[in-house]
Image (tube, rainbow over all chains, first blue to last red; front, side, top):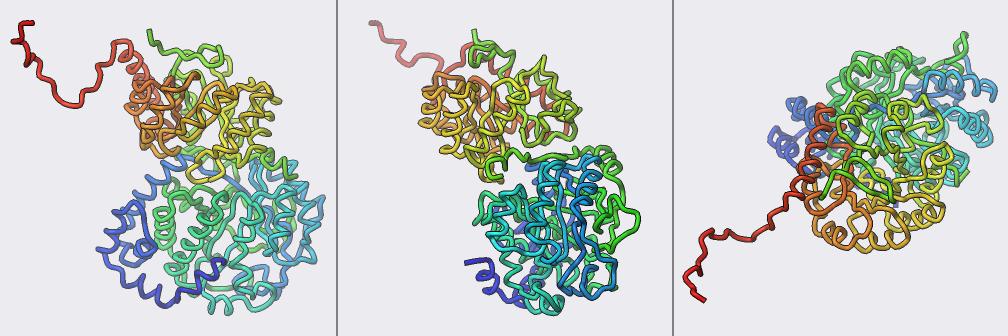
Length: 373
Length: 258
């Protein structure tokens, strides 16, 4: 039994018409409940709920404050490689794109890690395209060993692996996994993922589950916002998160809201997502799943990031570069997407403090992992 | 005389209030709140600090000449992890005191009784003063006391819930039976809850979320200080016993001659 068995019980179009048929009364009823059903969650994602965005913001803010305080946990990505065997139409790393390709050497990983940690970052996210030839298990193990010298928490956002492979990485010191389904719509998924291993919808859908089973402490999910109707998409993100929270009760689940930005290849999203849409999704998720981690990256502009503090988000990246070698090298390799918030870690931290939020650099310790290393 | 002093493992502390350090909007505000609270025992999650770094943002705001820095193992999923963290703190120069938290579920952070007991056994033998965070389970409290824990710290309600003393019936039993100080930890959301815990006979309370997430944490720290002091005065004054129904003040049987 996996989430695949659950999601196949739903029809995308049925959920869509259910969401679009919700009324103001439905929304009010849902907002007044302390325990929300999936029908309530659908109400909060509906067009009818847009008139209640301010009420949702207040509720989401109160829940977030009680559960997480006025804190934001910081992390940064370290891009290992932009080599990729897939051709995802929206991604800068698409194998068909002619960009300068690069895979960091171990020496370069060390340099990048050093540069990132010198800014104070202690939670690192290792990112790569899907190219087992360049980013093999051996490569990942060594990269992890290097990063342990600089960071207290190491997560990965790489090609989906098997449970055994994840378990091996966990034993080497990787404590978290991020993997986006991109779209939960099976038909659209085919349309966007034209080649490579990524064409397998189910293999990807089951990935968070394999990660949790392998022992990872945190598992991050999300839909790439813009590929499909965000209301339906986020409904399935919420169900997926809830399913994982119940089944893997020791794993902390977090949800990201990556919005499609300009990338090499010139992809224009068919379903553009406005700020209002993104916030509605975030509030609905927070009200539906009070304890889930919510992540907003530097894909979003600085002004937007500053304004949403306290309203639901719990983790944010800072000072990010999305190309391999980006932190230390002058000649740039191809990046995955372009960033909006280009502030340094220091500048971002200043801004957090000014708004009354405590930047949390460290929220894990490699000592937890000591027994398995 | 019931004073605002607490004795744990033979050591005297100036207040029955203990504070946690999570969720504050800044380390500076945390520091001011600690000051206002009058607390002497301050707990810090080892996962949140770099224990070997004196410049660490949280640690550098806690004066260890004024406070007992009580490291906690929050986030540990099992015995091994908790033991390892406690030893790490001691190796880094912390006093051998540990607030033992084994909380495998990352959402409600409820304590795992089995792993907590096993870790407590190891750490007590290892020379630690162990203060275990537990559910309000009277039998577990006795078992932990038997193996040498220096307090028990049962929860009033799930961590961060601000729900107050919801485990009241079991807490009464723990307080009645315990030979070590009982510290009500977690769930206390208002100064009145803290006062209630002490009035019921608890020896101390530990507060974090209620202070850290208040609009004004420093003012709220003060409020908790007063609540704890108020309870101490009330206990000294002699709490009137609760009556189930109203009692007439002129006697109904006053006419009887013999």
